[in-house]
View 1 (cartoon, rainbow, N blue to C red):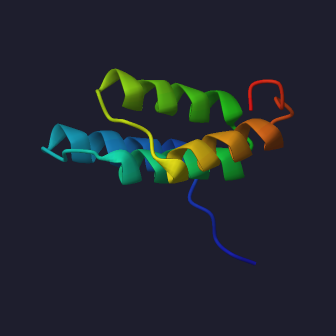
View 2 (cartoon, helix red, strand yellow; view 1 turned 90 degrees about the horizontal axis):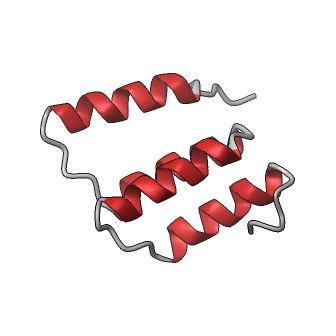
Length: 80
């Protein structure tokens, strides 16, 4: 069985890195969206996706796929 990093911890690390100058790109956000999706947290995945767009970062296929998967796993297929 694989060890999983709690999404809260992952978010804290992401924010900490941003505070220290990380210029997040679409891949950083896609990883976050995917992790939330795997954790069944579709709302958090959608929130991160919107944050990414608000930061002026254009979604790519990986980010869209991660969001679609997160919404589907969360029973939100109408959003997907």
